[in-house]
Image (cartoon, rainbow, N blue to C red):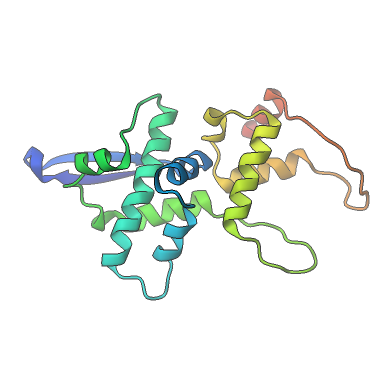
Length: 185
């Protein structure tokens, strides 16, 4: 989680803060609001020809989704993007692009171990897989909102560890104790 700070000119220069949480739940909010995956904004922000003019709108959309995920964790409501943007129209997003991108990269990107073929995984595919696995394991949105993509994959790897020589197919359902054990390690 990261906290952004900026002066809100409309309030006489009062310092305003905003918390961002890059989690799979933020991805879900982004997809619901904008109709595409969050990686579309990440691609724009990491492109070779990115400029501040092209980066700021994408960073603001990411900030909205991550702020909504943080508010969800605190049981607070967040308005839709247009209303939220109106509320924060004087916020200094351009001065906060680096922390927004850093939080997005830390939370949404993950190292995925590929098979021997060395093929590339589409990050969006990995993120959808995370949501599907979480549902199958019985992890609700509140618990999923505590994980970055990488933390969830790390927890899943620990939980499903088996002897690599064996190809035994098995189904395991994570219990709340299993998830709590991951957080205590």
